[in-house]
Length: 137
Image (cartoon, rainbow, N blue to C red; front, side, top):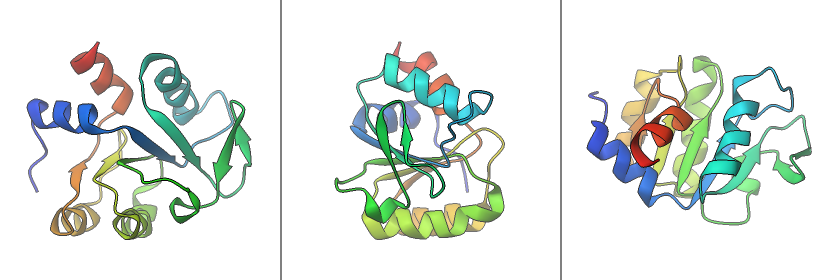
């Protein structure tokens, strides 16, 4: 699988209105915490959080799964171990997400291919915050 170039990444980021962050943490030392805080302050995205063990973050509800989110999700941003990516990809396909973004250090070739085959744009091993800041600010 070839990764989307900068032009395609820009298109993905511009097209997204609703973003689900899977694997968000309420621990300030975790990358997901800082990225979500930054996204809330610097982007127009409507953010939804997914983590089955916490119920609230930054005053917003945290959902147990992607399927629990009551709105259509454009982009699924994932902070999970690579071995956990396949079921998250399956869930993203099931909810009709348009894009699937694996954060820095996360790649899973089989899941990426499955997402592409289902029509999703797929980005691996890239930070949505860094890319947004670089391409759209």
